[in-house]
Length: 298
Image (cartoon, rainbow, N blue to C red; front, side, top):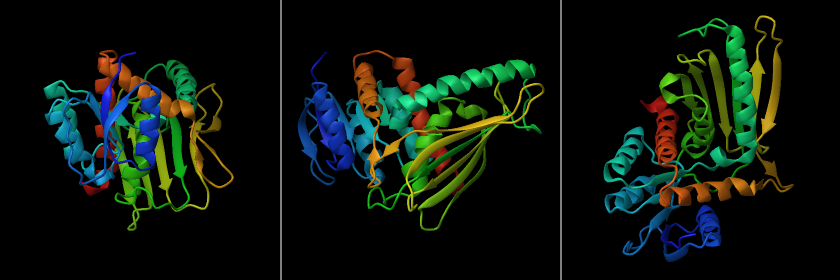
């Protein structure tokens, strides 16, 4: 595997996690700086931005303008305009941009998505002619629920940009953004609780709807996806829930190691020139997640 030199912006909890995993892949960090420190990007192969969310746009733009590939923590930016600007800048300059939305690489989600989409395709075949626009009977309803106990981390942005972008990213790996309509998006005044409703209104999966609930001041810790298939002709109704994380008795998230490992390996594949089309889709997915997360502000 090729040896890379990198720079790390932000050496907090996530910065340290990214650093450890990249170093395990042979990456050498030639600079580790905190927010506000001077940055020298000479002779680096890529930058890891794990600083507070409100600084992601400025740092990512700095490196992309200088032709340095960027691995940035979620959210990509704090406004839809800035997020899309970074994606466009990456494409225009031919520089890799990768957003660390680790749930997309969670093996539990990947297994769920495989079986869920298989079920959904069978239902579409049974339905024969897919509806368009509004439909009286939902094809399937999903609920994404993500709750965490109070923490001092990531409080520079509301919970929609902090946590809900994770579940939006999962939804967008299954249903194209162009087919989705935002039914509602609400965040509490203190920024710690949010709810959203999305609906697929065009394409082969028109009729899929989803609720998203995030709470970072909960008494419990969970990351769940619940699926409800209504009765459809001869097909019976069914429902089930999948958990995407395990937790320690102390309430700490027991990360699935493959989630973070996988996203780092994918990024290194991008640097090596592989998976280019997938990489561009993933970057646009991240920008679309920001657009959904701030839709109540537009």
